[in-house]
Length: 165
Image (cartoon, rainbow, N blue to C red; front, side, top):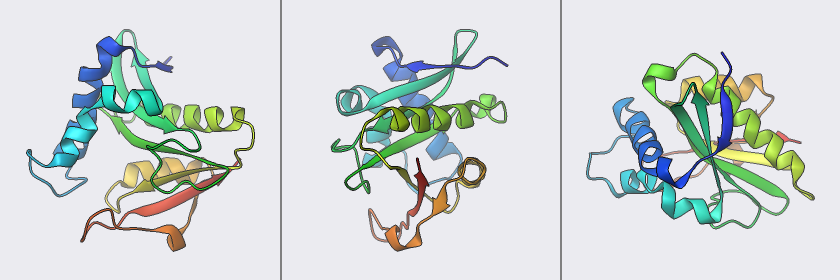
């Protein structure tokens, strides 16, 4: 399967936002209701595009999923420190899972981070339930950094990973 990874077009923001929100909501990856404010953030691709790079995975004209790459200093960074880039909101539609889209998106973030001068690490946060994503991170050489785990809200622990570039 020849998956294309590219920058999202503005006309795709709404569709990608819905793919992202549905992936988190329908898979029970986060425990929240349909009216949770974080779902609005997941859907707001247009709001995050100016501060990062929104990438999509496409196959034969169909969006499979996306990810947001945050370069150093971006307001989208949750845990990245100096010399670190971060990626967030990795999501693949249920129909496209198991076809390599998630891994292709993560590899694109790795490549983008390597292109940036002075960036030595790529970091991310994930939940305990995102087991498919964990397998991708392990396969690509990311290492758990439990000392950086954090809680964006009470009762929601986020696990962290880092890749040395």
